[in-house]
Image (cartoon, rainbow, N blue to C red; front, side, top):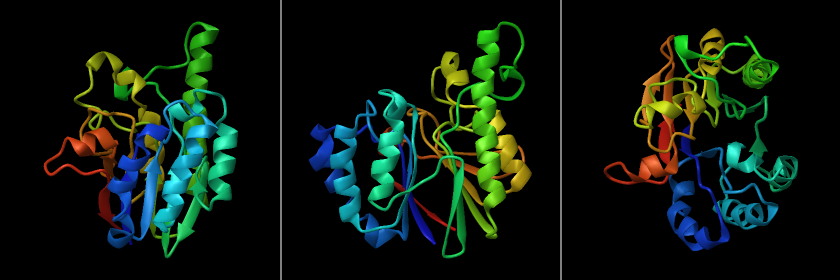
Length: 235
């Protein structure tokens, strides 16, 4: 299977024509399109509707997770309903199998990496924050446990490792993702992990267990030579 993956479209109607031009070849180059969150800029259904018109006209099976921007207007349930109604597979602690390849996904959350990962100690506000991070890791655990396919792809918005965040300001590393997600991936095993969110990070890294991790934020892909708006992976 050839997978085209991108993230962080931050779509507004002003970007409609440009996005059509950027994505029109994807069906000829891939079997599946993966969107790793931040599909809209402010999470408004009025922005999602024209974006879905573009995606549906690509006529390619599409798998997606939401990102933090898609939650901004507290309309995430409506966005997921709209996407599902148009045939997109929206992963939110859930799994999907197609042609022998399993996809497990969730948005993920922040919290930091390695020894710098925030723990549930101290004020109740800190414990609530960490609980949200743990809950997203548990959602990924649930999704991965549903897969029966030998080939496995994990789709996230937030980064599971620090290596693909490098390039961002060090001060914001803890807000780019959390190692809790990578721990789940290594426990279950995967062929690759796709994420976005880190617009100025690095494209490639690996979990401690050796699973390849790829940052497909569109701004990062456009900064490569040659520039691209999606990346192709063979699984």
